[in-house]
Image (tube, rainbow, N blue to C red; front, top):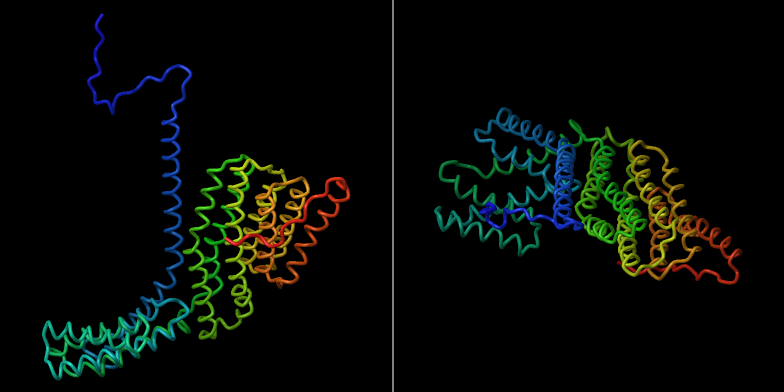
Length: 421
């Protein structure tokens, strides 16, 4: 009996699996699809978080632009109040924490643009090639003077406006100066008086992604050590290395909060709380870097098939929980006592793991647990010397007890200066 031939292209044909074989490609495809689904959800969550973070700035910019236009047009009788709202938005859109500087840069840029534009128009007239020459001259002059990028851009933009609008608008120079002053001043007024953001809320929102990233990757590393899953540990390492955006957002939020508390009387009572946050930024950054070394050495442990004592993944898990507790206690304004206790518990578990016996990379992981715990203690408000003492105490007591029970084969001295990187 003849069998109908499958005339479909080879790529569309189903290949019957032999009995006892596993569809490896199907498993890989399913895993890839699941990763894509998870990534799309994470991306949407990140985008919504960015929108929530930027909402305050967007409202400030809208209010400042509207007020600048209204004052320039109604009170100062400027028939073309374009520059005032542009200056207001430009000041607010500057890096948070640099708005005073941004306002000054706007004025300097306007001055350079007006000077170069008027000078060359007087001698050369207006036209396409004159416009190109004016912009080139404005940029080169500001670069030669060592000006910032903002001044260079503002000088070039002002020169363009002077050249293109001068034939149809007389006496453009003075309104341009006034509008620059007005827009920058309105932006600072909105920031300081009319709509000052809550600096601690801004910092909490900025700190959440950085701390969640650190806690999440430490959790993944702990699970990877338990199951000896090298791939999961490697992915955690890659993800933690991509932390520049989160740390930059946190640093910028802290600078913005400092600026708000400096110029806004309504926020002066929050200075002490802000100081605590500002001092925590650097040790959090160190904890990120030390955790990266911890995870990298965990990958090597799995590759080299070194022993993984049960307390070792537990100690890393305690570090992750300490990070989460630190974020929560910062957010609600509590003294981070629970975070400190969990950090010391991580060190104690690391001591137990070391006493049970570890290899070379394992000893580095233990050292990085101690170092990261010390960083988190400093971030919680403890000075460095006291943090180091507490870490030695939490680890040393356990080391002494283990030494008493294993006098014939004492554990080697734990490394005190782990490799950098």
